[in-house]
Structure formats: C-alpha cells, structure tokens
Length: 191
Image 1: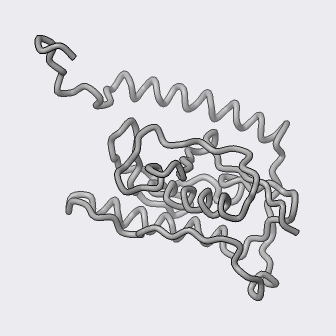
Image 2 (image 1 turned 180 degrees about the vertical axis):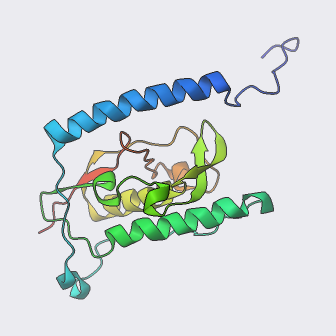
Image 3 (image 1 turned 90 degrees about the vertical axis):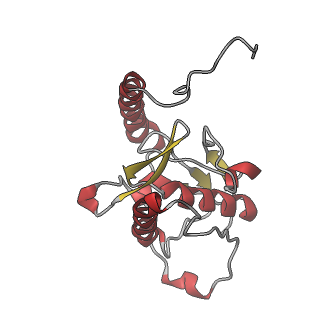
C-alpha cells in the first residue's frame, strides 16, 4: 500500500448491502442443497446404539468451552454453550455403520428458536455477531478433527473464511457449518 492511500476505517466491516447480498445467496444455496439432499444424497438418520457403551474410543477432540473474551460477549458465550448442549444431545450415542455417511445437518437439524436454540457467537465476514444457533462450528470443528484422527473419509468439509487466533482453523482442522448448504459429512470405514 502506498503512503498516500489511506485505508477507510470501515473496510472489512459488513454493510447493509453486503448483508442483503449474503442473505440472497444463502437462500439460493439453501434451495440448491435441499434439492440435492432430496434427490442425490438421501441422508439416512442413524440410530442410537446402547452397545457402543462398551466399545473403545476411536478418536477424540477437545477444545475450551468458554473462550477468553470481553464481558460484552458473555451472553454470546452462554448462548454458544447452550447451543452446543442441545446439538450434542442429538449426537450422543449415535452409531454410524461402516460405509454410511454422517451428515452434521441431517442429525443436528436446523438451529431455530422453536427448537430451543439461543443467540450464540457466529463468525461472519470476520466479525463476531450474535446468531441463533451460533457456536455450533465448535462442535463441527471437533467432529472434523476426530474424524481425521479416526481415519474416516471426509466427503464434505468447508473451512472458515477467517481464522480466529487459538482456534483449530490455525492448524487447518476446522469445519464450518451453515444451515443447510454448508455441511460436514464423512464416511465411516470401520465395522
């Protein structure tokens, strides 16, 4: 950058026009994914298996639940933790048979107020914003990391557009999700 060019202080901050364009693109991608899910992917919901209790752990991933942050973000932190608990209830004890594909959204479902989700932290265009279902990427990151450790075939994964210092994105082990068109999907090779 030359010395006579000054960066506008709002560069990088989302605008109303940008937000509207984002929503329009999202709606188109969601419709496209809905059609693909119905006609091509046909994800089956996998069953819970009580027999898994005696099995060994194939892989695990751990991250801090509460991030260091400003006091103004504490409500988003609490919302994120609440959202993670709701999503984990949908996945706890889930058995993915050998050769089957796991889909994050097929099992977690849409994060909405009607389903009990609250406003948590979402990273959008480099800004942390409150969003219903915010924080679920922490779960998708952990699932992606564990799937890699277990040697699962990654069928679909999208990295975050911005890297948060201290996150798994720094190591390239992140997987963002956005209902319903940005999914995390993997295939289990283990019997």
